[in-house]
Image (cartoon, rainbow, N blue to C red; front, side):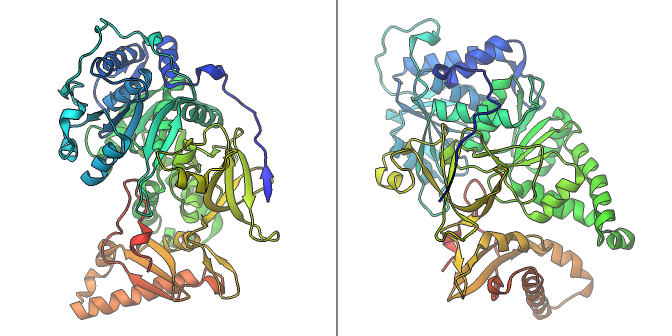
Length: 559
């Protein structure tokens, strides 16, 4: 077992230990950045930090006046919007516990979470209102995020109502529970991750520490669901800490809306998942780089390829508004081919690794990027690696630190499986850490395949190679009858475009697809060790079923 202690360096001295609460984040921001823009829809007038604090106070008082007490659970079911943040802070500042629910959850899942958490209230958007229709509304305080007005309230005889919410009236401690995050569950089971005020705020501070150039003039366009801890901690709490301005897209974040928002806001910060930048590279940049015989020929050689990447990189930054200096990538592995492009291009990307159970960051940004790494371990995080054999390079990652969850809500058995009594969290990820504390993830321990002579085969690494093929949209790799099998969803639109001039009959199209599948297998295997080569590729005609955070539900396909 290799154990690496935390290093307490580059701490942001914004708070004393007693003040690591979301309420203090808000009151401190309102004091320091009173007249600065805080939250807004793209193209709409923003509210200032002072107005944000006032709006939160109003909603906090509404909660208290309608029977919400410290420790009660209040859910949020809404798309990203300024009122999402106001709801979250109102719940936190009156001592209640936020239960953010991902908008893409099915109605049955939503109602199960409300029931499991025993939520006494919910902030809900008009669009998602139907998802709680099966809930007994007479027992639930329902507030619309459209206008922040009460839709339904349980019968409750309140104490004398105050004219104005007074923050110091309710004591909030850093170890009080701030949120219960129900994961989307790639194994089919949703778990409630318990996070304290200290977990969330400490992690946001650690994130701010790793991004050394942040200041109060930052502008962020929020793309990922706020109900996911990645966006909530880094895309909401961190900007509040530094007095940044956050902008939301009013409507579905389709590519045209995203690009319009970038042009309008000219953000300095964007947090994303690999899927977004992978699509841009594969569908927009790569075809441009290979559109004529000259650039296609030059692209085969190292130096000219790097120059072409640099030219494309400048255009890519311009497409994001031209002011971008922090493009965070997390939530899933980034393909090496795309990362090589971003590195050559001088694009300001930063890969990070985390889990909902760690609030979420485990690694942070570093000016020196190392290809294939997911960043440097945060200074406050201790790590140890459990190896099945001392000679192995990689092993399972365990972590410990101030951002580690308290456990799973009302599930002590599952908690004990991953969290030790002395605070070590079993991540389930296989990795190695280099001499400078850079982390490299190889895959999930539960997905690992044992080769014919005991070799470790990591499906995620094979999937990363498959994704570099222009005809592969997404894939999963698994073991079936002692063989390595891949299931691939092809890019039918691109294939049709490439071969439409052949005017193929249906039987010919089917044969062509078989040839393409075999070509994908051959080209991928040429880049793999003999023991990890793909024996068979299955064509996945429909897109894979995914969790709301866009992770493939592997358990539906692995037989």
